[in-house]
Image (cartoon, rainbow, N blue to C red):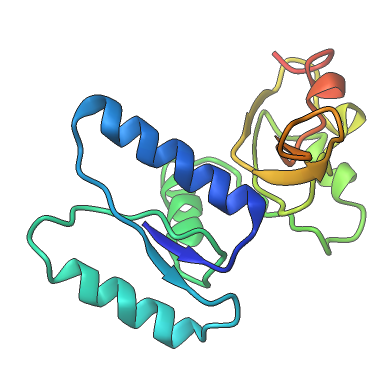
Length: 157
């Protein structure tokens, strides 16, 4: 797994993936890169890993402008779906999100998407991981998604 920087949520994510790999007998290893590594350098490292026969895939724990999200959107469009992409700087994102039948959230901001933004009975898939301060936890933080779960669960299907 390629780890870019030392964000707590990224470290927790990688820890969970390594534990899951161990439980099912998959060999895993981590490659740590500094927080401010260039995109080209990070992509080069991924290409180096691809050359190893025992490496079949890798999560990268920091946003890199790769076409994967766009490819997913294109696949949905090819299936005649209407696709809207909303990000943390979209003006009035709630106006777009509340029309969606399916919301896939990874906004990079803790609990950004509120229940009032979600259409009743919409399917919500929250793939965001954000560390927020929580003094009740031994680690001092807990992980939450991009969706405010307590609000969304009252509305979503």
